[in-house]
Image (cartoon, rainbow, N blue to C red; front, top):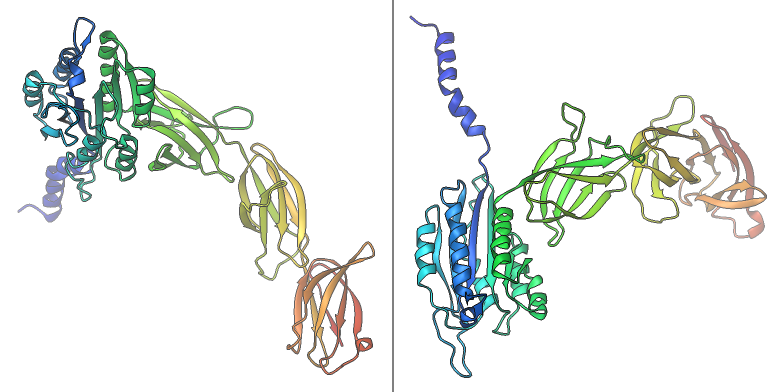
Length: 464
């Protein structure tokens, strides 16, 4: 009879492939919707034939190259192809999803393109708005990533007094689609400007350029590429690491990826797969943050994204001798600025960007340490004097205050509690004056004053 151990091992070996398959991440699914102009203006000649003929031929050639492409679903929406333009009247609802998404939609797209007639107007905004419903809803229970892409092909601008740019922004902000691609077919300069805000605009001023642009757009829509984020030291070396990094879509502010920067086994920044559709804002979460805007990557080209992020260490130490466990915070600011970067505890070490900082140690009195320099890959040590303890014992409760004495001046440090029978204060070493008046004393000359010297780690008591 086989032992239980043998049976368990046999089960693990049999199931191991399926376990591995379950854990392997699926490649992203790309859904690509072509929104194509079939308005009356597409009948105009472009080169030696109507625009619609050229656009149709070149798009059909592109579809041939996409046949059999894994992890890809295509769909086709046309506008301006159902209702002929009449004098003083246009049909702004003339837009329809002709071929819905499926892995086998190319044949249907070919048939539709070959039979289309260009008749009507140009409702770009309404076509984009309705395109939101063309994409199957995302299944948030499925971990597979889905990239929804719109490719708008048009030879004219919005004709129905609506705002395609606002519709595009809404589609992106809601996460329905990535930033659309727009191919302008033989447009003049004023028309180009009206479409550039819709998405990534590509100008196809000639039939030859249209063919090239279409290939570029399809390639970008399909492919991710590789990049590495180099966090640069102050002396220009890509040696910083172990920093959280966030990639944002710079246009919408949406978080695209969030990771911990890593060096690979060869000691260089690890390679990432990155989507070339976006213009990125890269934020390395150093203190303060290291930011690079307007980062663009090209499909199929490895991109090195260099971010200035040189750091050193700030170590804030307490004076010699044992402490009483009191936590003292230090406010850290860039020199000359009021914005607080962090509150760092005395007795800890913090990584900071290279440069000058002002420190405000929240002792009594507060200790200001300006222009502390943080150098690349070095530790700057700051010693905070250890406090002493002042006990104030009044005969009866009453108002009073503690002042530091320095250079002939008095600076307020703290008030006595007028209702307390005693007070205890942790003060930096130095000379102080304590003023006090009994609550029952109603004359100013009955104010009592005492000088006291505080030493690190020592306690002193004064009685009134």
